[in-house]
Length: 407
Image (cartoon, rainbow, N blue to C red):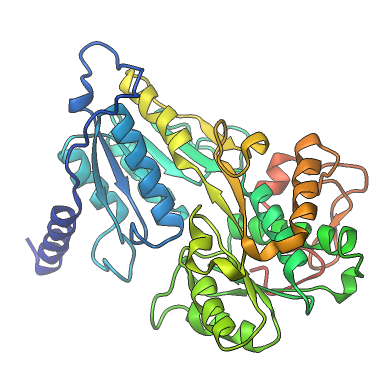
């Protein structure tokens, strides 16, 4: 065994030894039982997180979601967090999955777009194990990248609608007309999310604020990854500070971590009239409640719960799940995984937020209806037409009216 391989295995063993969890107790509310011979105590779910499980954002939302599922079903959870090139330079997602499966995992969940090829490789190597990739499109038969892999499924939420609500909240909260968007890396997902936020902001700026869209500045700054990697990405703390110090009185987060909230709180304490919009995690406003306009969030327990129960029944949850908002219970989703929690800083503008959500729920507001133009001026969705799922998912550029690179 060469030394490089030795240290890879050593790092992996240390990581997994530190990150496994005890078997949770069965919840009294659990009502469904697995198929005969598949006792719940013998069913292990593995989860691989790209960042820390307590990041107050993307990863914490995933972790708390799967924790709830395993408690409700009486199953066991094994996990590894901070699986990324900075924290674990000698460890890949596929290697971690091998170790989780060796520990008994009958399902492995990868929680980042960065893991798409790790998820596919693991599914091919372990055809008897259910593999879930949160985000990604390899299981989408109508998508551009379909792979006919029977034990691989994708789960994602239609956060486009949550981002529209977030953008609306930002437009309702800004006094300068300058909104800064803290973006991660550039791909299909991040283009469509930031563009959805802009569509929401533009609509509410015009409709409720009665302002000219030319007076709305919506700028996206990409840091280069989902969170800060010193020496590799822009520092999101500095990017947020630059926004707050440069006249952008609302900063929207599109990254996994809470720099928009933390730096916003510091700016507010220094006397600046600023606000922020969090992302991912339902409790995000708790970081600085007085200046929080709201947070679009995921309830991963719903779709993860469905997938775990399917696997426990001896079937492969291999579909493409793209779950939309639960408009009837928007602050506490019960049927779909996308929610939005209004923040204290909305103040009297909360009534406009309610009107906006109601319009999206009944279909009277459809921001995916054309004309929609791309950043280079070309028409993407013609007037009178509505964007298809494929046009939304594979958005090739930011939209006209936004500032920031598309590639």
